Image 1 (cartoon, one colour):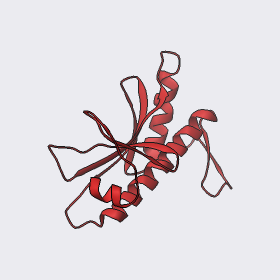
Image 2 (cartoon, rainbow, N blue to C red):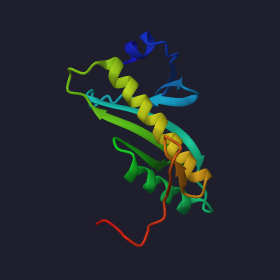
Image 3 (cartoon, rainbow, N blue to C red):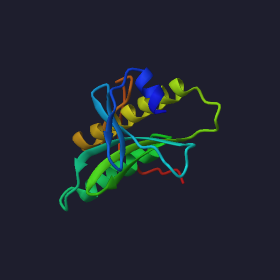
Length: 143
């Protein structure tokens, strides 16, 4: 994976005990190799927001909204910071260039969605900019 990231032009910076940091469309991304499971691929956007006592509940609600809306990724709190991650299991026959592209696009979209929710009080403009989504429940709920 490291070789393929370099081939694609990413400038990797080794981060001890974490992985390799690089930029993707102005987003700081951490590739986190898993030594115990080489088939597991994780890209993370670390330290999106610092979590404080004052904002913790709100950030958790926005992370939850993102997690139920965006598939194949997650937003979580790690060491008092919000992180977003894209994770995949490789079966061995994947096109690494395509896997990297899909993973990074997903991560970028997830971070954008989450940040819009946080900055706009739980409202995120859809990709086509024609509709908005509110994170608050309506009277009708699907269970």
